Length: 350
Image (tube, rainbow, N blue to C red; front, side):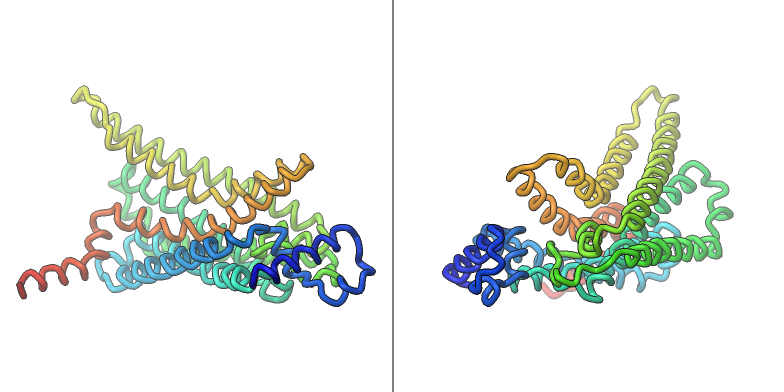
């Protein structure tokens, strides 16, 4: 889109905002999707930079997660270890989330138009809810697995058998898909706004979809109440597990009259990673508070939060393989094995 075309579209959108809907220039030339896009990203110069950010995050997520999944699957020693199994499940959730949202956002940015509300938008609504809950459950199970390994090492092989591990994975996906199904069914209790074929966002996040469906109360109440209760429960389990591990590690150092600095750093590190996982949810909650106020600053802030949410949906999938994969020595050897062998062959040739 050239600067002249963008200026003309801005003028058309201004006519629409002034309620000149009967003006023939508006009815003939108005690009509704383009106007909605301008309301989200009013500065055209920033669009190429945003496109580069999303393309880089998408490629990095697909390459790193795909490579990690492939290498762990090829490792016979690690493929059925509980911590690796839950980690692999987290990677699969991240890949589903990236493949579902990233191409649509990039296409909207390149076309400078918002998405049309169609079947794919409903699929994003369903997959988004399912993948987020699956990731949250997987991280919680990873914390519980470490708790059993550290605090109940003697009974660890009895507690986490292969049968129970399969049951845990099945429970994660069944519960996650059930949440997405219930939310999608409740969404259709509302009435679709036929006069607004385009969504007012770059991705089909819950608030945008529910707005297009006439703000049905049932899915909003279910999503917020069930989501908050699940989030609170997972946080409590996560904090309990790492606090008990830190407590046991600290008690082990008491006879030596020393402070276990490594345990403290490990606990702070994984708590920080959990906060990173929850950033999309925190960004989702913040606009609800800010929308209580009116004004241009509020509209600008809501736009910033919408773009931030779209970016943060792709950030955890890029970070998880590096955090949970490279930090563990055994998984690090499995992942970096090809590079080490290549370096050894190169040294031999030299």
